[in-house]
Image (cartoon, rainbow, N blue to C red; front, side):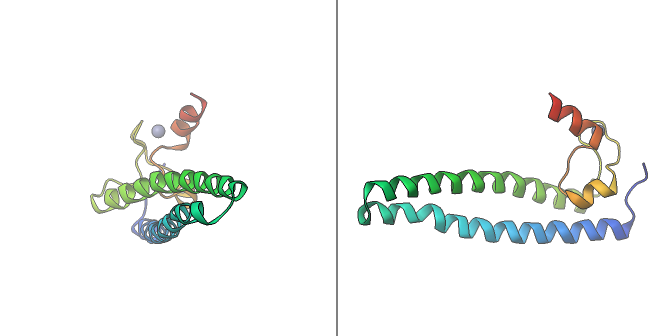
Length: 119
Ligand SMILES: [Zn+2]
């Protein structure tokens, strides 16, 4: 597998930057969603409160997942600036551009990812 061209690298850097912006926006909105329950507790009945708590836990799960991905995206952006991007963290091989296009924050090549998923 060949290394990334400067144009490919630039494309991935752009999409990582966009993903980061989107996720930061999501986290801001998510914060509002998790704060809502506190307000609801005094104002509404028991059933609605249960609903609100359930919605809050969904919001928290989503936020956690977003935070994990955001960390990976930031790490990938840092790796680009350090000229260390696009290499598998497990075997050191270059990661296929097509895979990075779909998931630019990937840290593992497809082979290693498959093994990690199966484990
Ligand atoms: Zn690998």
